[in-house]
Length: 72
Image (cartoon, rainbow, N blue to C red; front, side, top):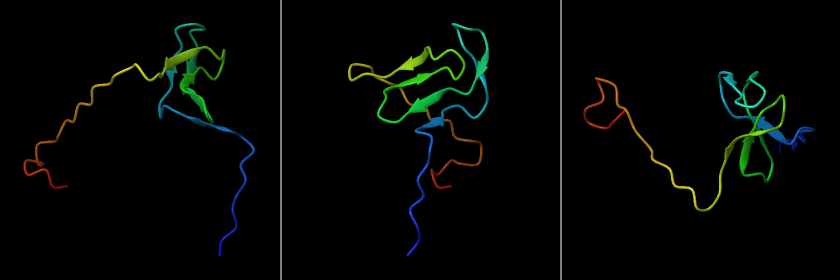
């Protein structure tokens, strides 16, 4: 059986491409920390997006021109 890897960092990048932080105006990919319900700037630590139980989201699915039968 394989070994379990232990990571020293307890966060992951959120965005694939950098976005500009509204607080420090620097580019960041946003960090999401373990057991935290927000995405924070990797430079200044301010929240880019807060997620709470009262927030609702809308999901938009955009199919390309070849996907008429919903089968990829």
